[in-house]
Amino acid sequence: MRIQRTDSRRLKLSYTGQRRKICRFCENKADYIDYKEDRLLRRFVNDRGKIIPRRVSGNCAKHQRQLTKAIKRARQLGMIAYTPEVFD
Ligand SMILES: [Zn+2]
Image: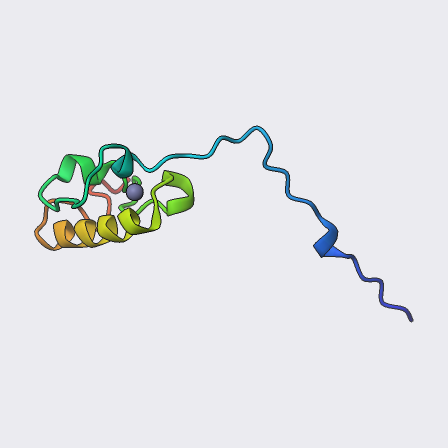
């Protein structure tokens, strides 16, 4: 019996029409992300309290690192929830 292989490497991923996102912290020339700015940090956390990945938010590596640190710091101080507050 022959095993048929599918060449997955040949699959082309087409990302045409998708514009490259720019990091909003680079745009504002921010060199430090403040953990006290909970309103800003909340925008990078989804409704389940998870940090939005870089591929979605469009942040650069440098700022994403700073952002995760700021979010984790803010969580410990109770400014951002670890989990959603309402349970249905
Ligand atoms: Zn950046």
